[in-house]
Length: 486
Length: 119
Ligand SMILES: Cc1cc2nc3c(=O)[nH]c(=O)nc-3n(C[C@H](O)[C@H](O)[C@H](O)COP(=O)(O)O)c2cc1C
Ligand code: SF4
Ligand code: SF4
Figure (tube, rainbow over the protein chains, first blue to last red):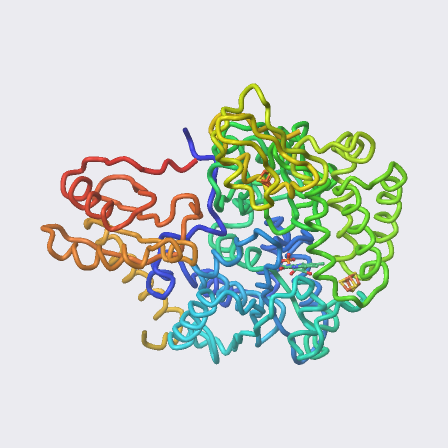
């Protein structure tokens, strides 16, 4: 089969020694910087605008436009920041780029510095990425020694220094204004925009923030041309996107596909389908800020707009595949658990509202929910979305709304019939021994940690539902399929 | 690397490295994924093994530790390119499979099980 993948951001990953600058240069490394420095600042900006590249950090803002804005702001000092916070659960595309091809990001940051008139850049990277940090440090030292970073780059008089700043792993610190606060040594809390970082960013100076993957595309665009890049992808979303396939898909890993690839191609052709031949139920994109796509979206070409229209978002590229064994209210609860934990607490709708959403979901998955609760979930979600200060709060209810929209029947079953069809919610399931199938081997009884099973050897066994803690141990142990979940 | 003082010096270094790279294409090239995921599943040992065993083989070779190809489901992965052939990626490589890769594929051009087809 012809490969459906096109590698641009990951072009060098797996093909060069990330700790050897020569390898990078042999594959056109720093050629884009050299080209850039021999032309005008406007040329670079126009090339990026023309390419149609949009931010890969989640928002999808046109990168060239962002550079143009930062370039237009007057200022003696400007900064370039690379956002390598990558806090989305299950996402690791940025780590992979930094570990496999650190120079591409350094080169792109220098190109950006030249374009907007900055001489200093920082990579904000989470401290949990020690290998990426190590390789970045090596790459920075090598590029500096070779005169490709630092003072008077390639004798042109252009200076660009890059430093590292470490994040402690707070999800909210990936939001650009919180990231800047954190870099300045303050609490990582978002602030109101405007002013945008382009006007007033790090240390109050004009600052351009881009994501790792966004930067990784830049040298390729300059080397191969804006038209080449714009020829890949869809009308409004050009180039490729790296996805981290995870969950119930066979080939868990990173893939890079042209924008406009369908979910079916991603999951079934590239991902190899669902583990154990089970039935596909949904795929979550956009992590805790996104929503789920269902069977009816399988043939939708994936790009920024189509995901939004489907009630989800591109996000940073996490793609978690779910099958019939996933309970959707429980999935929503999982994401809310994450956002409640990660909310910075600055504003009330996010801090308190999401907690209440979580409690209602908890009620539902424990069999205590009502139809009234479903309505409350929806109303409260809308309020949180429209009144939170930053993107975290504004998107936190998305997993709830999206599962409610696409899987209302599952919610309905939980609250009205007190049933969990995926058999995930413990309060709603029962382990039962079918007398006809029980041979009285006693395996279940020995496995039960709650002494809930009675019965003599070679006699029918019985589970005492009051004592059963629903751990599933007996179900695992029975070799005769005599235990079922109801 | 020595300091590059102008575009000219950069361009000649670039050409020099490209020539060197082209020369490498006449050798057996072994790329061993050494990203966090690969190392966690044991790639460091595999790298050591190739570094130790390849000099004993009657072929010219280059071994490179690299980032990953994104094939988390099959780490550690090793990509081998024989002169004149396309790249072949082997998955779930331990020292036992590394030995097979050398004995069967590198020395005799015979494929072994567990080749990953990239989709
Ligand atoms: C809660 C929250 C978390 C975010 N986390 C990240 C992140 O981990 N990495 C990232 O690049 N952008 C993240 N963003 C988006 C950034 O605010 C910003 O838009 C992005 O870094 C801009 O780069 P881009 O235009 O290249 O995408 C996050 C946004 C929000 C609201
Ligand atoms: S929306 Fe949430 S994370 Fe964002 S500022 Fe408000 S409390 Fe903090
Ligand atoms: S589910 Fe667990 S607690 Fe319940 S009967 Fe089986 S082994 Fe015992």
